[in-house]
Picture 1 (tube, rainbow over the protein chains, first blue to last red):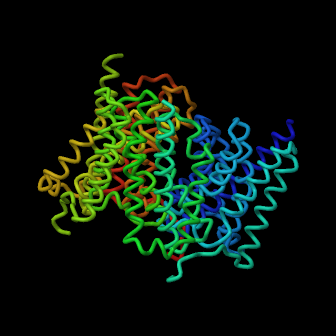
Picture 2: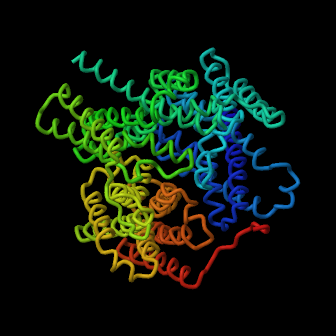
Picture 3: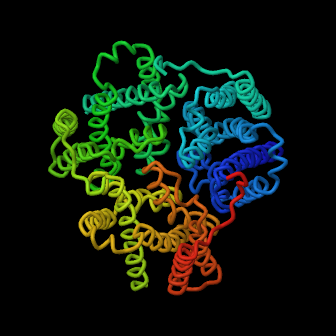
Length: 207
Length: 207
Length: 207
């Protein structure tokens, strides 16, 4: 049980770091100042989780009451600002880190919702919200249509990750299995979709 | 009492469907994919109600815990995608469905707030929020200034609907009367304003 | 104690008025109608506080349950619409009123969070949120990148004000001292930053 709790914490902070890096890089590219970069970094990292916590009645939201999330966002902002040469070696680093955060948060978001006693639908929807909420807020802040609504496999990957956790819970399978399986399926789907330009169909004939 | 409850449910799901159609059509026109259309459809349909439920302490919000809202959004997204030829026969279908949802949600939003024991001001403000919240979120998602802030009779129509319900409650008049009266007044005002281009005054001389 | 409570109320309504004026002027310049101006005015004035109240579990948020906030927003919208000639004499009036609201809300937001029994980190973060939340919502509504993310001393000034209140609370110093000190430090920093174009560093070499 303690090991599971440690794993949960590691995954959670890992997802926070991934999203914070994604937010910090996007904010830096837009020319925001160091404080603005930190605010976007923190908001993107914790925004989805904060919306989830407010929806399930976890007051105050963990994102603002646990110092580790703020600390991780600070580190991520510093890394994004400081090691720019390293980050530039990675191809489209924002999207890579974004995929990591997406997968981790879909899984942990669904699990936390279940642990608060809510039903399966709430768990799936808030798993998706935890995963995509931060990115949607980032895109709204940066004044563009959220990436989630482009014709790419994005929120649907989060749906897959959350569904694995919820289905596992229904079948009585341990988190030890559903967490890595849900994470890997979501991450793999997202990366493959990026690599092979998999898209969901659109319906605007005139566009 | 049971009949009233059934009526409330029918009205609520009807409003959800109207807003979901409005969101799905707007998302489809913007060229979003099928999952994006569903997400916008659901968010527009339930966004205002979710914000209301969070504000009155109804946790988790009904919009995410009751499967019927998600189901109705799914149907609406499918209809918007599938019966495009029929929808195109209607003149500006988004705005028509939007007016239906606006009127229904102003009335039910005010009523639910009262039933949670909050005061008349909260009921009027959250009636308006329930009615216009989804549309505002839709427009933020689609990266444009919310329709509510254009110089048309929109939120003021919702104010009228919510005021009827609250005034009726103060005077001890049954929902059976205030619901249809508030709905019809709001809907009529909105449609007449659209037809005759009624506008509220603006104050930017230079524009 | 009663005097402190009166002071708290006066400061709170003063900050509300300052932000409401800021929102109303911005909405008027954009050419919104009288109802739209009122909605933006109210949302900017109370948006940060409502987000804070939802985060600390103060349901329903004071901004929508206490009629004085709505009344103050109404007055502010009327003033902004009515005394345009006077307002135009002030240089960049939106930014001046914005700085007043920023300072007042950083201080009162941190204090209210502490009074609900939350920890110092929550108080600092929600002090900043109370201060900048309304302005961020205003800029999202008006479809532009929030001012907070420009390279100016803005949220960092709110951080300073909130830190003074939280540090004072930790050291057992009365609000009587920390309120005016926090307010004046935040306001002075913001105004000096505007006057001398103090900026925080940015990191986008190519821009």
